[in-house]
Image 1 (tube, one colour):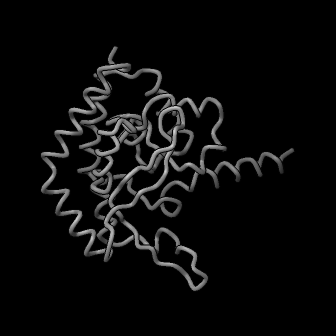
Image 2 (cartoon, rainbow, N blue to C red):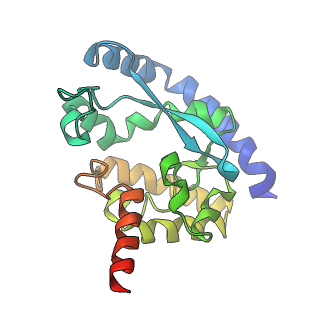
Length: 212
């Protein structure tokens, strides 16, 4: 009953309440981001949702659009600003995702929505993480955040999918607050945290091929 009905109702009510209560902070971050990045303070990107249906996830921008002489985006570490690191360290960059939750594209708790480019690289077992709505936070995020391996993260995701409950969601939300306040496990994607999953899985496949 909780997973099929009550969870969505609570997600809607809590996200709506949070948007109202946090509106002064959100407005301040919008203005600050617009000044820091000299324009649009938001970042949107397609992500796979429940049943791998693609939606556009919205976040506060944490990186510039700086490019090299050939017009290619510079590495994440070079584009991440000091302000962006603050947003990521406090998880404030994730706050606009409350709109995705309100729209029913995400949930407060669930496996994090990852890049669309990763879809071809999941095993059938790993793809089960998409059988529920992706979350603002999840079991993997309170168990190491970016410091775990991809296998560990997916194991946590699948553990959550197989045991969705109100008690577990409350526990994860409380742990998320503690982790955010502790500012632990933060990394730049593909640089000082986990490598991109598609790159990681291709490297695994190449090693397996070479060992044959």
